[in-house]
Image 1 (tube, rainbow, N blue to C red):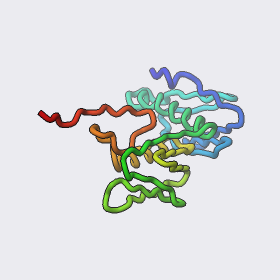
Image 2 (cartoon, helix red, strand yellow):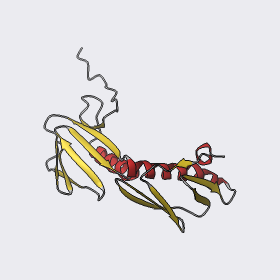
Image 3 (cartoon, rainbow, N blue to C red):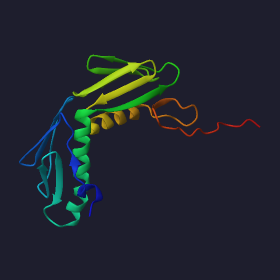
Image 4 (tube, rainbow, N blue to C red):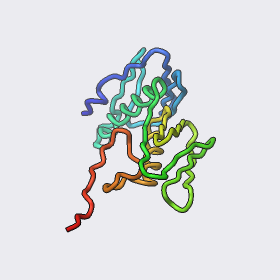
Amino acid sequence: MSRIGKKGIVIPERTEVSINSGVVSVKGPKGSLERSFRPDISIGIDGRQISLAVAKENKQTKALWGTYASHIKNMIKGVNDGFEKKLILEGVGYKSQVNSDKLILALGFSHPVEVEIPAGLNVKAEKNLLTISGIDKELVGSFSAKVRALKKPEPYKGKGFRYHDEIIRRKQGKKSV
């Protein structure tokens, strides 16, 4: 039994949720999101509350129960508040800038690295701070992970991209005898 799935999800004011043949649509002040769900979990709306129940009793549906509840909560939070990830770029000569729909990075390679910004995301580059924001939590997280993977922080000097709240464990360099 899922503890998260058993709890009802409260629909806040200024938010509309509709279910149409397995597709959940959420509209709020920041935009709208849609996601399709499998029919193994039945999703119902009772006034200002969403309830989820298992339609078929098996191991897979019990695993999906809480996951679907979390997806719906994240959709509701996204259209009301939005999500944001901050990346810090450390290193001498490392730069980032945004040109319309591309993120251009100078990461110490012989060429600039260009990354296409997906639709629905806002990216701001200020000195060494890169702010990625949007209403879809999955899209914000995957894009920030993709950018971080271009130059992960190394343990000796800490050069590269790191998350705002991430702590890099530093290693000691060579000792001279």
